[in-house]
Amino acid sequence: MKAMIFAAGLGTRLKPFTDHHPKALAEVNGKTLLEHTIKYLQRYGIEDVIVNVHHFAEQIERAVAENDGFGSWVTISDEREAVLETGGGLQKAAGYFEGEENFVVINVDVLTNLDLGKMIATHEQSGSLATLAVMNRATSRYLLFNDEMELCGWTNDKTGEVKMARAAQHPKPFAFSGVQVLSKNILNMPFSGKFSMIDVFLHFARTEIIKGFDHSGNVFIDVGKPESLEKAGYLFE
Image 1 (spheres, rainbow, N blue to C red):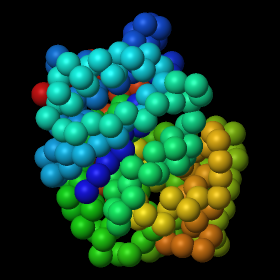
Image 2 (tube, rainbow, N blue to C red):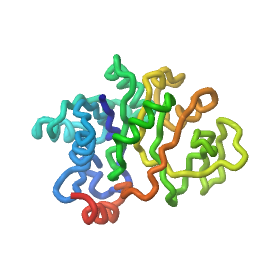
Image 3 (tube, helix red, strand yellow):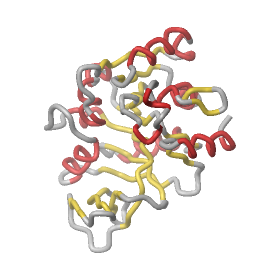
Image 4 (tube, rainbow, N blue to C red):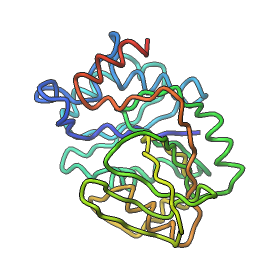
C-alpha cells in the first residue's frame, strides 16, 4: 500500500520557526515531523510514500535525500508554483496511486498512536469510499456523523456555519484527525485547482458512504504550535 504525506502548508502557527523552515522539519526529540510520519507508516508496512512540498520545498528535498528517505521510497510532489491545499494536492499526485485499490493520506503535523492497521482493515471490510480518523475532542470545526458513523455534514462552531451532505436527525460531532484511508474512486473528484479534502468528502457523502473511524482515547497531538511541539516531546520518542 502507498501513502501521501501532506507537507506543503505554510505552518503559520509554528512561527517563528516557519519563517525560515517548513513545518515538516520541526523536531520532536531530535526527529523531524517528516521522519516521525514516515516511521509511523513503516510500522504498518507502508514504505512507498509521496510528499507534497511548497514552503521551503528544497529543505524537505534535501532532508529526504540526505537521509535516504528515512528508510522508505519517497517521491516528491512539487507545488512550488502554488500551494493547492489538501484536495488539490491529492489531485496533483493522483497518478502516483495508479493501480492501487486503497491508499493512506496523513498530515505531517499530527502525531498519534492510532492503530492504522486496524483502520485500514476496517476500511477494506466496509467497502466505503473513504474512512476518516476522528475523535471526541474540542476543536472549532467538526465533521458530523449519523448513528452508523456515516459522514453527513460539517460545522464551524465559531462561525455557526453548517454544511449538510445528507439528512440526519441528531448528527454527532467529531474532530478530524488528519488521517484517512481512501479508495481509488475518490480520485474522480469534480474539482480543480486549490480546494480542501473536506469539500471532496462532503461532495461524495451525498451519494457514497464516507465512514468515520472513532479512535477516541488514543494519544493524539496536532503539532501546530510551539507549545504542542514541547508537549509532543514528552509523549513521542
